[in-house]
Structures are given as structure tokens and as C-alpha cells.
Image 1 (spheres, rainbow, N blue to C red):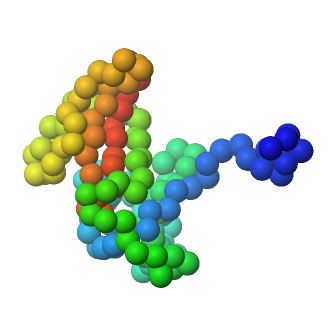
Image 2 (cartoon, rainbow, N blue to C red; image 1 turned 30 degrees about the vertical axis):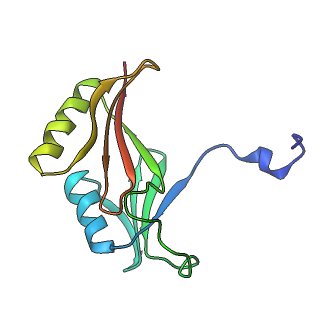
Length: 132
């Protein structure tokens, strides 16, 4: 596409919506494990969590109600949450204390991140990372 395309005006990702299987389980996870605070609730089908300049929203299927859910054990999305370096290991300890399975423990990667991977109740892949 050329620079004359209207899509050339895209400057940032404003919000991400996770289409959920089980709203109650996902709310508990994002609020009780990741300690995100609801910043806006549009209905029982839509909850928003502000993080810096972006928003993470949980939504029951609406426009996609006829879509088959992604099979369990298949990541539909990966979300990466940036934290200070020492916090990656602290998050690992916290997940284990809560009985949450870890996909990959804290690891220094050759691309300059220390990463920790785990899944939310719907199977989405979550990453806690720090620049190293």
C-alpha cells in the first residue's frame, strides 16, 4: 500500500478485546491474579482495564457470536505485560503460590527480554517481561 492509503494514519493500538468463554473466570483472573482494576463497565458483557495508554477489554461474544471458540490449549492471542526486571521473578513466585501453571519460567532471552509465560482461564498466552 502507498502512503496515500488511509491506513497510513494508524499511529497506535488503542485497545485490545479478548472474546471470553467464561466471563466470571476471566474477571477473577485479571482482577485477582493480575490485579487489574476495572476502569469502565459498559454491561455484564464488557469490562475494561486501562493500562497506560491502552485498554484491555473482556467481552462476551457479540459480533462474533456465531464463531466457534478457539480450541482449548490453543492460544488465540498473546499479551505481553512489561514490568521492572526484578518483578518477573516475583510474578513467577506469585503464580506458583496461586497454583497457576507456568508455561515457561523466568528466562533471559537473546533478544533482550527476561520473560515468564502462563495462560489465562481461556488459554490465551500471557507474558510478563522486562527489558534486560
